[in-house]
Image (cartoon, rainbow, N blue to C red; front, side, top):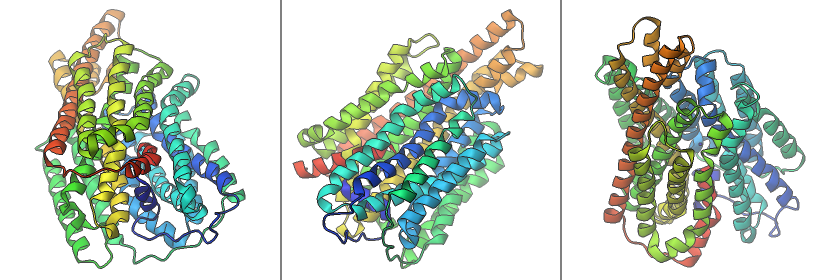
Length: 535
């Protein structure tokens, strides 16, 4: 499921500083090593985009409910986001190359065992392990790039690395569709194994060892409080349709989240070397810019989570055609990313963020108001292209604002928090939008008065299609028609909620974000690392 050059550098080392390359000309194997490092990023970013296409197959193969699918998707991103800062610090302490190899081993091993899962619970656990490995991979690759390349060549190196992130996002859905056309859902995880092995060999043969960096004390209490607190919050949201929003377990979890958040803030304020400088959140520019990225990924992840199921189950498209449904979004995002510096130079950061969020809201709003069970593939593709254009327009200036709005001594941490906030926005998008869709589906299917074995169809759309396969043609047609209508209505309501969130974000940016002068140089720098945002 990372911006300016300053932000990219900070993601590599979290809160540490970066030493320059001893040789001003850079390492002699730096360009070959860059290709190898970029391949590791393709593997990490490919996984999540492949998984979205595989969700219906997972539901069928593992008898996974909607909440199971939410956790299968969120477990990876939640662990990745919660441990990214700590992993960057550990990588700097023990060596970036060692951290990279270790992270790849954990990611690849987790992928292989995940492919052998026989229950949704097992898969959720191994997805979390994969997220742990990925948390070490991304900052380690950037740390090595910074140490191999002299400052004058870093923009080009970051551009190549960023393009690799875009490749993973762009080809993932189609790759997943092609795999599922011939193999089972486990192929979505087996595909990572040869990619990791090839990257591992390349790193051992080509990528040099870079010097370790001095770091302060590891803030393990903050890491533990953050991952436990976020896990409890996500569980409360995802399980609410089953338990009830006012059920004692739900209320206790929400209260526990508030308590753990308070403890996290109190600890970070009193410790000498915090994992997160919480005082940054008193900076209006930083908070608003970071929130725009969180809102963007909230809307995107939540929408893509349900859209693949809509394509494959409601329309009956093959996984490959369903995967193609994400291509207009990816292409539009890439095209608008290239134009983002020009737009930002003309409109300024505040204007670009406002227009970008407004464009996202427009695309999702049209989707929510016009989609039904018979909506053509081309229309949905066009609506997702509008969303992608808005996202591509705003991500680089948002990252630039995040690092420019804080004092220079905090720019590294601000940039690293940028990555964390984006991922957490995606986690909450899947949890909240997925839960809204699940709740509305159940409420609408309750009107069908299903009894006996058929009552399982009221739980989620994959279950409804599974039950229908065992009924007579007439009964099956009635059940699938009702289930498809209920899911589509629920999905459009979720899209409208995401559109409202994006629209509110646009209004807040337009009213509250401080106006900041934008130079051509700053815009160009932000564009060099823009595609890192898609990783």
